[in-house]
Length: 106
Image 1 (spheres, rainbow, N blue to C red):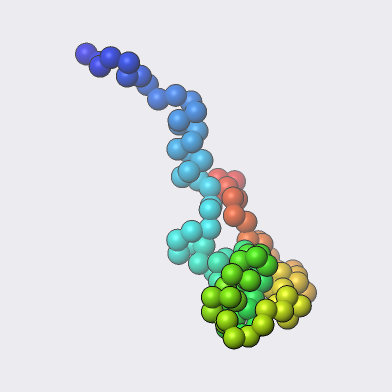
Image 2: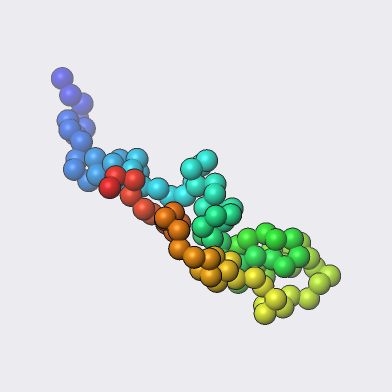
């Protein structure tokens, strides 16, 4: 006997959402650690702080970091290190570039 207004089966949309959540690489956990650090492939973070080598994805986040961590030093956008430009200068290897939403099921 089923309850009132309770679906007896899962919908296709719900099943697809579960499959997508299980099989999509979102860059988290131990598997995405090297992508976040950016040691081998350039990482997701584009900009690197010239003072403490912290990486952030955009200039606005870097300015927030700089104001919080280095308040006595003036913020100069031209001194930021573009990690994607330095990683692109390295010859292409067989390793894939970082992808935030790449499917594991291929």
